[in-house]
Image (tube, rainbow, N blue to C red; front, side, top):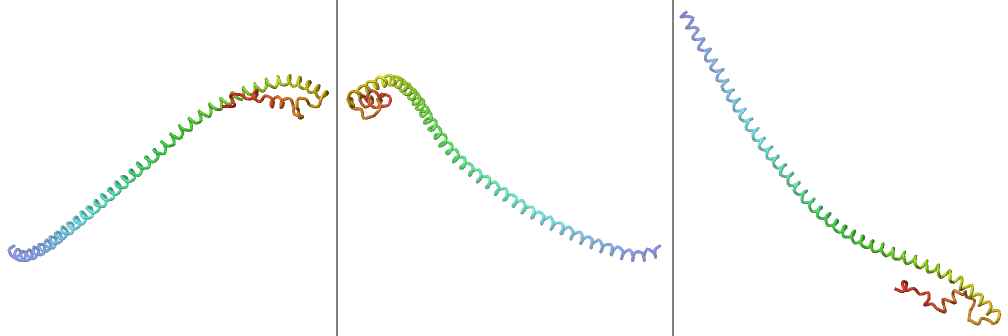
Length: 174
């Protein structure tokens, strides 16, 4: 066994050298792997930092845009509120004017009704007076040529020309 151990030891020595070289190669590869992994980790960290920076910038831009939009909407709201105030004041003015016009229309309708009543009364009394006047006029025409100065006009025209103040109504003069 000694001889085999001697030859084995030579071969074991070479085997252990090969194993040591393989282990060294593996260690070198392992170190290279660790260096490669560390490089990838550093690259990933840098990429993540850059991505986070871009994300923060996007978020800030978005906040700035929202702030600008809010300011714009506040200005627009102020303009709309001012326009609404003007419109409300205009509406109040129109409502007040409308109330005045309705009151005037009611007064004018009452005045018109009174005038129609007066005309109806005058028409009834004029018909009686016209009949008497026509009788007098016919008698006068038969005897003389127009003693009262009629020029062919109706008796109502004669009455109006002879006493116009009778047909002037105080409500119409104001």
